[in-house]
Image 1 (tube, rainbow, N blue to C red):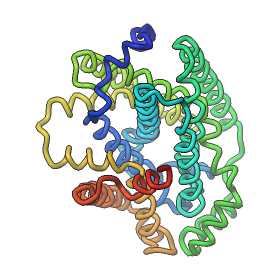
Image 2 (image 1 turned 120 degrees about the vertical axis):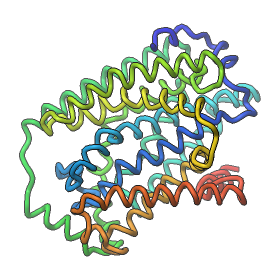
Image 3 (image 1 turned 90 degrees about the vertical axis):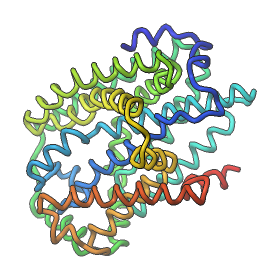
Image 4 (image 1 turned 90 degrees about the horizontal axis):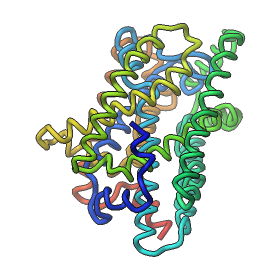
Length: 387
């Protein structure tokens, strides 16, 4: 599947991709899907008794029953990987635009990445410990520099990064199997923080444990580099366009991603908990490719309606949607807000209902917002500052 894309020349991708002035509707839909899918994973963190610290304490999706198992199978790690690939696609679009206009590269893109890092830092400190924006900003700077190098150099970095990622996850999985269990007294303190603690208590908790909360983008940096470069290659090969070449690529992605990835995911999900990292960081990216192909097929064959239009709108305001979904979930779940997680977090219906409610709010809200404004609030702020 990827081998045929490796032979793409430096100029052919530019011809295969859509014109610079034209948006690719599939990309906006995919961004919207990725935002809702990311919420489908994170909502279980918010509804957990241990909040953001749950994954560090060894708690996955708990209290969800069949709902939790379905959400884990469909969402865990898949949409994080999709969002990463789409950031790589966005980087490729920025590079193509700079090349067309004769601008120096990376040039001003470094400022964009730096601002994204600042946004992610604020998001991490004030709102959500598992922010992805900081890691994306660092990866974007690295990959932006690589885009000026040869196709051969990019391939070498891409596959070296994947090899390093496989080795890291194998070591972490082995260490997890041999590591100690949970500390019940510490778990109780953390649960009390999220059930009854103030917003400032949670801010201090994040800052006190900043390194461990930031461990995910550190250990997955090779995966981020690989997926960014994969996004670049898919865009250059025309995978998101309406041409026949794009359809063929998406069909292959769907066949490999769902045909191979889903059976592997089911097998790993019912394996011991020690394989949690393999499920999230090894198998999930394979399934994600199938999701891209499946979404492309649905966009191509289904009649454009309010749902697809709303997904496009959310995709165009993806940064705002990502921040807003975490804010809404925090207000609903934590003790400094409505505190509903302490009351209903163990109920199987609560997390799916919260996901559905916030998703509907994002879809409707983004559509209404774009009727009046050109960009989402976070996107508008970014453009104003960088201008």
